[in-house]
Length: 140
Image (tube, rainbow, N blue to C red; front, top):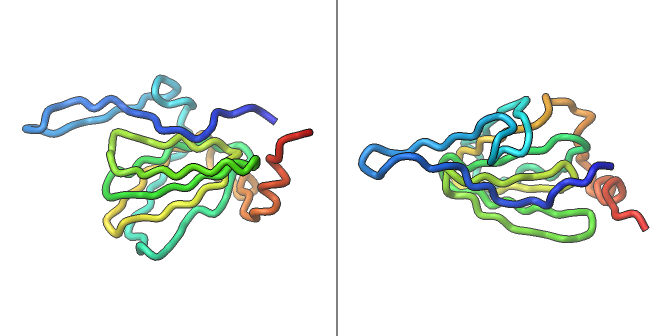
C-alpha cells in the first residue's frame, strides 16, 4: 500500500483584480496539483439536507473545489483522524487521498468541481465503512 499525504488544502494562483475578475489555474502534475488529472466531474443543485460521498477509494486521488457556494467536507483516515474543511473560495481546493473516507454537504448554490487522478471504475470505490477501516487500518 502506498503512502499518501493526509487531506489538506491547496491554494491555486489567484490572478486578476476586483475590477475585472480573477482566474485560477492548475496545470497537470505541476504545483499545486499533486497528480495528472484523468477525470473531471462536477456536482450541483444538491439539496442542503443531502450528504454525498460516503466512500473512499483504493487508487483515486482527488482535488475538490467549491467553484460556487459552500461545501463542508469531512475526511476520516482509518486511524480515526477526522478533519473538517469548509470550501468556499474558488481558488482553494482540498486534496483527498485514496485512503480517506469522505463526505460532502453543500449549500444550495454550491457547484463542486472534482479533479481525479483515475478514470471512473466502480471497483475503485470502497462504499462500506467497515471495509474502509479494514482496508486502510494501520498495520501493527
